[in-house]
Length: 390
Image 1 (cartoon, one colour):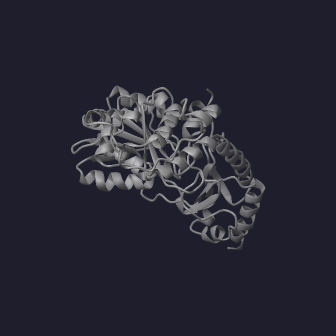
Image 2: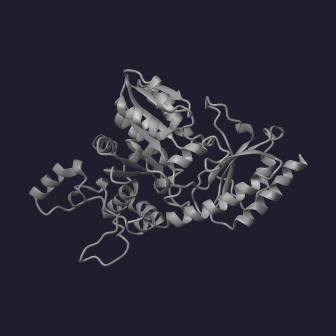
Image 3: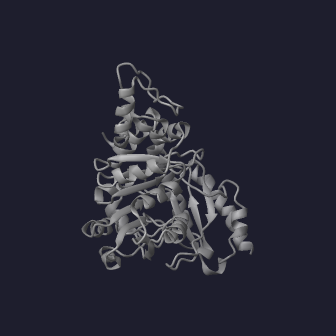
Protein backbone atom coordinates (compact mmCIF):
# COMPACT_ATOMS: atom_id res chain seq x y z
CA UNK A 1 0.00 0.00 0.00
CA UNK A 2 1.08 3.57 -0.62
CA UNK A 3 1.75 5.63 2.48
CA UNK A 4 -1.50 7.60 2.42
CA UNK A 5 -3.41 4.31 2.51
CA UNK A 6 -0.99 2.78 5.00
CA UNK A 7 -1.59 5.64 7.43
CA UNK A 8 -5.28 4.80 7.45
CA UNK A 9 -5.06 1.02 7.66
CA UNK A 10 -1.74 0.09 9.35
CA UNK A 11 -2.17 -1.74 12.64
CA UNK A 12 -5.92 -2.11 12.29
CA UNK A 13 -7.37 -5.04 14.19
CA UNK A 14 -9.11 -7.30 11.70
CA UNK A 15 -10.92 -10.48 12.67
CA UNK A 16 -14.23 -12.19 12.10
CA UNK A 17 -15.51 -11.22 15.54
CA UNK A 18 -14.39 -7.58 15.62
CA UNK A 19 -16.27 -5.18 13.37
CA UNK A 20 -15.08 -1.77 14.56
CA UNK A 21 -12.63 0.48 12.71
CA UNK A 22 -10.70 1.56 15.81
CA UNK A 23 -8.95 -0.72 18.29
CA UNK A 24 -10.41 -0.95 21.79
CA UNK A 25 -8.89 1.20 24.52
CA UNK A 26 -7.95 -1.45 27.06
CA UNK A 27 -7.09 -0.07 30.51
CA UNK A 28 -5.56 -3.02 32.28
CA UNK A 29 -2.68 -4.15 34.43
CA UNK A 30 -3.59 -7.72 35.32
CA UNK A 31 -3.98 -10.39 32.66
CA UNK A 32 -6.00 -13.42 33.75
CA UNK A 33 -4.58 -16.77 32.65
CA UNK A 34 -6.50 -19.88 31.78
CA UNK A 35 -4.23 -22.22 33.73
CA UNK A 36 -0.87 -22.60 35.45
CA UNK A 37 0.53 -23.88 32.16
CA UNK A 38 -0.78 -20.80 30.36
CA UNK A 39 0.89 -18.54 32.94
CA UNK A 40 4.20 -20.35 32.45
CA UNK A 41 3.97 -20.20 28.66
CA UNK A 42 3.24 -16.49 28.70
CA UNK A 43 6.13 -15.82 31.08
CA UNK A 44 8.45 -17.75 28.78
CA UNK A 45 7.31 -15.73 25.76
CA UNK A 46 7.45 -12.27 27.31
CA UNK A 47 10.79 -11.55 25.60
CA UNK A 48 9.21 -12.25 22.22
CA UNK A 49 6.50 -9.60 22.73
CA UNK A 50 3.89 -11.85 21.13
CA UNK A 51 0.63 -9.95 21.32
CA UNK A 52 -1.55 -12.87 22.37
CA UNK A 53 1.02 -14.06 24.95
CA UNK A 54 1.16 -10.91 27.09
CA UNK A 55 1.64 -11.89 30.76
CA UNK A 56 1.07 -8.46 32.35
CA UNK A 57 -0.14 -4.97 31.46
CA UNK A 58 3.32 -3.38 31.27
CA UNK A 59 3.99 -5.46 28.16
CA UNK A 60 1.24 -3.60 26.32
CA UNK A 61 -2.34 -4.25 25.35
CA UNK A 62 -4.05 -4.66 21.97
CA UNK A 63 -4.31 -0.84 21.95
CA UNK A 64 -0.53 -0.57 22.21
CA UNK A 65 0.24 -3.26 19.69
CA UNK A 66 -2.02 -1.78 17.02
CA UNK A 67 0.06 1.40 17.29
CA UNK A 68 3.37 -0.50 17.28
CA UNK A 69 2.40 -2.47 14.20
CA UNK A 70 1.50 0.75 12.41
CA UNK A 71 4.85 2.34 13.31
CA UNK A 72 6.78 -0.65 12.00
CA UNK A 73 4.73 -0.69 8.80
CA UNK A 74 5.52 2.99 8.18
CA UNK A 75 9.26 2.59 8.83
CA UNK A 76 9.57 -0.23 6.30
CA UNK A 77 10.50 -3.92 6.21
CA UNK A 78 13.64 -3.52 8.30
CA UNK A 79 11.60 -2.43 11.33
CA UNK A 80 11.34 -5.38 13.73
CA UNK A 81 10.05 -3.79 16.91
CA UNK A 82 8.57 -0.55 18.25
CA UNK A 83 7.78 0.88 21.67
CA UNK A 84 6.25 4.04 23.14
CA UNK A 85 7.60 6.08 26.04
CA UNK A 86 5.97 8.79 28.17
CA UNK A 87 8.06 11.54 26.50
CA UNK A 88 10.29 12.17 23.52
CA UNK A 89 13.27 12.57 25.84
CA UNK A 90 12.66 9.14 27.38
CA UNK A 91 12.70 7.68 23.86
CA UNK A 92 16.07 9.38 23.30
CA UNK A 93 17.68 8.24 26.55
CA UNK A 94 16.52 4.65 27.09
CA UNK A 95 18.28 3.36 23.94
CA UNK A 96 21.47 4.96 25.26
CA UNK A 97 21.10 2.97 28.46
CA UNK A 98 20.43 -0.15 26.41
CA UNK A 99 23.62 -0.03 24.37
CA UNK A 100 26.19 1.83 26.49
CA UNK A 101 28.20 0.80 29.54
CA UNK A 102 31.13 2.13 31.54
CA UNK A 103 34.26 2.39 29.43
CA UNK A 104 32.42 2.85 26.13
CA UNK A 105 32.93 5.80 23.79
CA UNK A 106 29.75 7.45 22.41
CA UNK A 107 29.52 10.01 19.61
CA UNK A 108 26.77 12.63 19.34
CA UNK A 109 26.13 15.11 16.57
CA UNK A 110 26.85 18.60 17.84
CA UNK A 111 23.35 19.83 16.95
CA UNK A 112 21.52 17.14 18.94
CA UNK A 113 18.35 17.97 20.91
CA UNK A 114 19.42 19.98 23.96
CA UNK A 115 18.04 17.69 26.72
CA UNK A 116 19.62 14.67 25.01
CA UNK A 117 22.93 16.53 25.07
CA UNK A 118 22.51 17.21 28.79
CA UNK A 119 21.81 13.52 29.43
CA UNK A 120 24.98 12.60 27.56
CA UNK A 121 27.17 15.19 29.26
CA UNK A 122 25.88 14.56 32.77
CA UNK A 123 24.32 11.10 33.21
CA UNK A 124 26.38 9.13 30.69
CA UNK A 125 29.63 10.68 31.87
CA UNK A 126 28.65 9.85 35.44
CA UNK A 127 28.15 6.25 34.28
CA UNK A 128 31.72 6.20 32.97
CA UNK A 129 30.88 6.64 29.29
CA UNK A 130 33.27 8.78 27.24
CA UNK A 131 31.15 11.36 25.38
CA UNK A 132 32.30 13.25 22.30
CA UNK A 133 30.51 15.53 19.80
CA UNK A 134 31.09 15.72 16.06
CA UNK A 135 30.17 18.45 13.55
CA UNK A 136 27.08 17.93 11.37
CA UNK A 137 29.11 18.44 8.20
CA UNK A 138 31.01 15.18 8.73
CA UNK A 139 30.04 12.43 6.28
CA UNK A 140 32.15 9.34 5.51
CA UNK A 141 34.98 11.02 7.45
CA UNK A 142 33.09 10.19 10.63
CA UNK A 143 35.29 7.09 10.85
CA UNK A 144 38.15 9.36 11.94
CA UNK A 145 36.23 9.98 15.17
CA UNK A 146 35.92 6.28 15.98
CA UNK A 147 38.00 4.72 18.74
CA UNK A 148 38.48 1.04 19.61
CA UNK A 149 35.81 1.45 22.31
CA UNK A 150 33.29 3.42 20.21
CA UNK A 151 29.96 1.67 20.71
CA UNK A 152 27.21 4.09 19.66
CA UNK A 153 26.65 7.16 17.50
CA UNK A 154 23.58 9.36 17.75
CA UNK A 155 22.44 12.01 15.28
CA UNK A 156 19.42 14.17 14.54
CA UNK A 157 18.22 15.27 11.13
CA UNK A 158 18.01 18.17 10.78
CA UNK A 159 19.67 19.55 13.90
CA UNK A 160 17.59 21.18 16.60
CA UNK A 161 17.32 24.92 15.90
CA UNK A 162 20.31 25.09 13.49
CA UNK A 163 18.63 22.82 10.88
CA UNK A 164 21.93 21.43 9.60
CA UNK A 165 21.51 18.14 7.78
CA UNK A 166 24.02 15.31 8.28
CA UNK A 167 24.78 12.79 5.55
CA UNK A 168 22.90 9.94 7.20
CA UNK A 169 23.61 7.18 4.64
CA UNK A 170 27.36 7.86 4.74
CA UNK A 171 27.47 7.96 8.53
CA UNK A 172 25.31 4.82 8.85
CA UNK A 173 27.57 2.97 6.40
CA UNK A 174 30.69 3.87 8.38
CA UNK A 175 28.99 2.82 11.62
CA UNK A 176 28.04 -0.55 10.18
CA UNK A 177 31.55 -1.16 8.85
CA UNK A 178 33.02 -0.45 12.31
CA UNK A 179 30.31 -2.27 14.31
CA UNK A 180 29.02 0.96 15.87
CA UNK A 181 25.29 1.16 16.68
CA UNK A 182 23.68 4.14 14.92
CA UNK A 183 20.71 5.98 16.44
CA UNK A 184 18.78 8.88 14.90
CA UNK A 185 16.14 11.33 16.08
CA UNK A 186 14.00 11.60 12.94
CA UNK A 187 11.11 13.63 14.39
CA UNK A 188 11.28 16.47 11.83
CA UNK A 189 10.98 14.29 8.74
CA UNK A 190 8.48 11.77 10.12
CA UNK A 191 8.42 8.25 8.60
CA UNK A 192 6.67 9.76 5.56
CA UNK A 193 9.65 11.75 4.29
CA UNK A 194 12.67 9.75 5.47
CA UNK A 195 13.11 6.14 6.56
CA UNK A 196 16.50 5.84 8.30
CA UNK A 197 16.35 2.06 8.74
CA UNK A 198 16.30 1.70 4.97
CA UNK A 199 19.67 3.47 4.65
CA UNK A 200 21.36 1.42 7.37
CA UNK A 201 20.53 3.17 10.65
CA UNK A 202 19.85 0.77 13.53
CA UNK A 203 17.46 2.69 15.81
CA UNK A 204 14.95 5.43 14.93
CA UNK A 205 13.39 7.83 17.43
CA UNK A 206 10.38 10.10 17.02
CA UNK A 207 8.89 12.54 19.49
CA UNK A 208 5.30 11.44 18.94
CA UNK A 209 4.31 14.59 20.82
CA UNK A 210 4.93 16.35 17.52
CA UNK A 211 3.56 15.36 14.09
CA UNK A 212 2.42 11.84 15.04
CA UNK A 213 0.13 13.00 17.85
CA UNK A 214 -0.46 16.27 16.09
CA UNK A 215 -2.94 17.88 18.50
CA UNK A 216 -0.81 19.17 21.41
CA UNK A 217 -2.66 16.93 23.85
CA UNK A 218 -0.04 14.30 24.75
CA UNK A 219 3.65 13.82 25.38
CA UNK A 220 5.18 10.66 23.93
CA UNK A 221 8.27 9.28 22.29
CA UNK A 222 8.62 6.16 20.15
CA UNK A 223 11.56 3.96 19.24
CA UNK A 224 11.68 1.63 16.24
CA UNK A 225 14.56 -0.85 15.93
CA UNK A 226 15.97 -3.16 13.31
CA UNK A 227 16.39 -6.89 13.86
CA UNK A 228 19.89 -6.66 15.35
CA UNK A 229 19.10 -4.04 17.99
CA UNK A 230 15.50 -4.82 18.97
CA UNK A 231 16.13 -7.69 21.44
CA UNK A 232 18.59 -5.68 23.53
CA UNK A 233 16.50 -2.52 23.39
CA UNK A 234 13.38 -4.44 24.40
CA UNK A 235 15.11 -6.06 27.38
CA UNK A 236 16.16 -2.64 28.67
CA UNK A 237 12.64 -1.32 28.12
CA UNK A 238 11.22 -4.16 30.21
CA UNK A 239 13.91 -3.95 32.89
CA UNK A 240 13.42 -0.20 33.36
CA UNK A 241 9.62 -0.49 33.48
CA UNK A 242 8.95 1.75 30.50
CA UNK A 243 5.25 1.89 29.75
CA UNK A 244 2.74 4.39 28.39
CA UNK A 245 -0.94 4.63 29.23
CA UNK A 246 -3.39 3.21 26.72
CA UNK A 247 -5.35 6.48 26.46
CA UNK A 248 -2.26 8.32 25.23
CA UNK A 249 -1.45 5.43 22.90
CA UNK A 250 -4.94 5.69 21.44
CA UNK A 251 -4.52 9.44 20.88
CA UNK A 252 -1.19 8.89 19.12
CA UNK A 253 -2.63 6.12 16.95
CA UNK A 254 -5.58 8.32 16.05
CA UNK A 255 -3.23 11.19 15.22
CA UNK A 256 -1.15 8.93 13.02
CA UNK A 257 -4.10 8.39 10.66
CA UNK A 258 -4.30 12.08 9.76
CA UNK A 259 -0.57 12.86 9.88
CA UNK A 260 -0.16 12.78 6.10
CA UNK A 261 -2.74 15.45 5.32
CA UNK A 262 -1.75 17.58 8.33
CA UNK A 263 1.93 17.59 7.42
CA UNK A 264 1.18 18.31 3.77
CA UNK A 265 -1.13 21.21 4.58
CA UNK A 266 1.19 22.81 7.14
CA UNK A 267 4.18 22.48 4.81
CA UNK A 268 2.32 24.21 1.98
CA UNK A 269 1.62 27.08 4.37
CA UNK A 270 5.25 27.06 5.52
CA UNK A 271 6.43 27.48 1.91
CA UNK A 272 4.27 30.56 1.51
CA UNK A 273 5.50 32.06 4.78
CA UNK A 274 9.15 31.31 3.96
CA UNK A 275 8.75 33.07 0.60
CA UNK A 276 7.34 36.11 2.40
CA UNK A 277 10.12 36.12 5.00
CA UNK A 278 12.77 36.11 2.27
CA UNK A 279 11.38 39.44 1.00
CA UNK A 280 11.77 41.16 4.36
CA UNK A 281 14.65 43.58 4.99
CA UNK A 282 14.90 42.43 8.61
CA UNK A 283 15.67 38.82 7.67
CA UNK A 284 19.18 37.67 6.84
CA UNK A 285 18.28 34.08 5.95
CA UNK A 286 15.81 31.28 6.56
CA UNK A 287 17.07 27.91 7.80
CA UNK A 288 15.03 25.26 6.00
CA UNK A 289 16.67 22.33 4.19
CA UNK A 290 14.04 22.43 1.42
CA UNK A 291 15.27 25.85 0.25
CA UNK A 292 17.60 25.57 -2.78
CA UNK A 293 19.85 28.19 -1.16
CA UNK A 294 20.20 26.21 2.07
CA UNK A 295 23.60 24.51 2.56
CA UNK A 296 21.82 21.25 3.41
CA UNK A 297 19.61 21.31 0.31
CA UNK A 298 21.67 18.76 -1.71
CA UNK A 299 21.41 16.17 1.07
CA UNK A 300 17.73 16.89 1.63
CA UNK A 301 17.00 16.66 -2.10
CA UNK A 302 18.86 13.34 -2.41
CA UNK A 303 17.53 11.53 0.67
CA UNK A 304 14.16 13.01 1.61
CA UNK A 305 10.74 12.77 -0.01
CA UNK A 306 9.52 16.03 1.49
CA UNK A 307 9.94 18.70 4.14
CA UNK A 308 7.89 19.59 7.18
CA UNK A 309 6.79 22.95 8.54
CA UNK A 310 9.46 23.69 11.17
CA UNK A 311 12.24 26.14 10.27
CA UNK A 312 14.52 28.82 11.64
CA UNK A 313 14.79 32.52 10.84
CA UNK A 314 18.01 34.50 11.28
CA UNK A 315 17.55 38.25 11.59
CA UNK A 316 20.18 40.80 10.62
CA UNK A 317 22.88 41.69 13.09
CA UNK A 318 21.26 44.91 14.34
CA UNK A 319 18.44 42.84 15.82
CA UNK A 320 20.69 40.68 18.03
CA UNK A 321 19.12 40.35 21.50
CA UNK A 322 16.32 42.67 20.34
CA UNK A 323 13.64 40.15 19.31
CA UNK A 324 11.51 40.05 22.46
CA UNK A 325 9.18 42.98 21.50
CA UNK A 326 8.44 41.33 18.17
CA UNK A 327 7.76 37.96 19.81
CA UNK A 328 5.54 39.57 22.46
CA UNK A 329 3.49 41.35 19.77
CA UNK A 330 2.34 38.13 18.10
CA UNK A 331 -1.40 37.50 18.29
CA UNK A 332 -1.89 34.23 16.37
CA UNK A 333 1.46 32.53 16.77
CA UNK A 334 1.74 30.98 20.21
CA UNK A 335 4.81 31.43 22.38
CA UNK A 336 5.34 27.85 23.43
CA UNK A 337 7.76 24.99 23.17
CA UNK A 338 7.08 21.96 20.97
CA UNK A 339 5.83 21.86 17.39
CA UNK A 340 3.97 19.58 15.01
CA UNK A 341 0.56 20.38 16.46
CA UNK A 342 -2.30 22.04 14.63
CA UNK A 343 -1.38 25.47 16.01
CA UNK A 344 1.49 27.72 14.92
CA UNK A 345 4.28 28.56 17.37
CA UNK A 346 7.24 30.93 17.42
CA UNK A 347 10.03 30.97 19.99
CA UNK A 348 13.46 32.49 20.46
CA UNK A 349 16.10 29.96 19.41
CA UNK A 350 18.72 28.71 21.82
CA UNK A 351 21.68 26.35 21.78
CA UNK A 352 24.57 27.95 23.60
CA UNK A 353 26.15 24.58 24.40
CA UNK A 354 26.66 23.80 20.73
CA UNK A 355 30.21 24.02 19.47
CA UNK A 356 28.99 24.84 15.96
CA UNK A 357 28.75 28.66 15.61
CA UNK A 358 25.09 29.65 15.16
CA UNK A 359 23.74 33.20 15.80
CA UNK A 360 21.09 32.15 18.31
CA UNK A 361 20.89 35.65 19.78
CA UNK A 362 19.11 36.82 16.61
CA UNK A 363 17.17 33.72 15.66
CA UNK A 364 13.64 32.44 16.08
CA UNK A 365 12.15 29.04 15.35
CA UNK A 366 8.79 28.91 13.61
CA UNK A 367 6.42 25.96 13.59
CA UNK A 368 3.62 26.47 11.09
CA UNK A 369 0.28 24.87 11.92
CA UNK A 370 -3.04 24.65 10.13
CA UNK A 371 -4.19 28.27 10.26
CA UNK A 372 -4.68 30.25 7.06
CA UNK A 373 -1.15 31.24 5.94
CA UNK A 374 -2.27 34.77 5.02
CA UNK A 375 -3.43 35.32 8.60
CA UNK A 376 -0.07 34.07 9.85
CA UNK A 377 1.77 36.44 7.50
CA UNK A 378 -0.41 39.32 8.69
CA UNK A 379 0.49 38.44 12.27
CA UNK A 380 4.20 38.41 11.48
CA UNK A 381 3.92 41.67 9.54
CA UNK A 382 2.38 43.58 12.44
CA UNK A 383 4.85 42.04 14.90
CA UNK A 384 7.80 43.03 12.68
CA UNK A 385 6.75 46.66 13.15
CA UNK A 386 8.00 46.35 16.73
CA UNK A 387 11.46 45.67 15.33
CA UNK A 388 11.23 48.81 13.19
CA UNK A 389 10.17 50.92 16.18
CA UNK A 390 13.23 49.85 18.14
